Length: 311
Image (cartoon, rainbow, N blue to C red; front, side, top):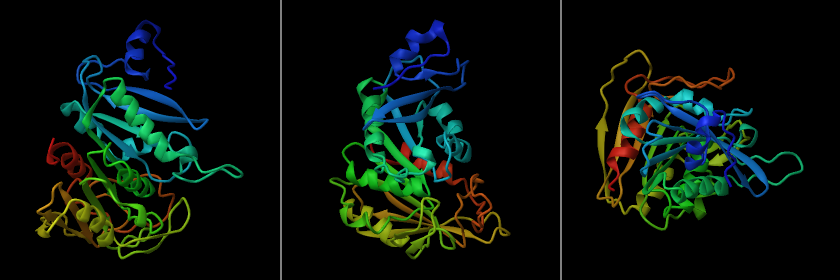
């Protein structure tokens, strides 16, 4: 159940309609954002919800964005800063939700405690938004960065009836989850990975993640899971103009052909553990490799999820 802690008493009733804590009163074209609290399996879970049409009661698209592992509280806000999706939401009416992992790491248990039910948390969050009339049932999407991208793929695989599309930045499917990743229906999917990522090996192997080391599939094998579910029959290759010839990288996009839902693989040749066009915080001095500047990958992902997927 949502816990509502309004900071603006006069607008508490309005905030209660939407099931979140009102932290800012929006002027025209300004964001209203709130902290959402749920109890999942006896564990308090939190998220930040951002919208630009709070007072217009209608169902809207929702993108749930899972942060990378960096530790600390309020990690979802880092993903908000890193990707800058609020700017795109301003004109679309979509809602962006930034959940927080327990202690900043997805799937990692505290000493002596069971691993948190992250999948249950995300499902409960999405379901609540539908039940309260905020989310469009056919337009709920999930995306994630690094470790958040890994668990976003897992959740999408297990809940293709709930999510219409999924995306991941700098992430491959963990090998332990791959055998059970079988979407029950075609699921739109975009993967954006660098071929020279020092943390998540492009060709598969041991990923050096903040959450701990783990074996992952190759990027090609990761995309193949979703291409198979979408019944893709081939690929179309698109080379992106190399606008920054000094960044040590360039981008090639593999578009699935004949797919029942769109599947795209954005291969950043020479790219590192970075999001093209965006500077990520939270690396804590760990080398992340080349930063591509040929396009804005956050915008690319946004347009894929909000505009390319059939309604």
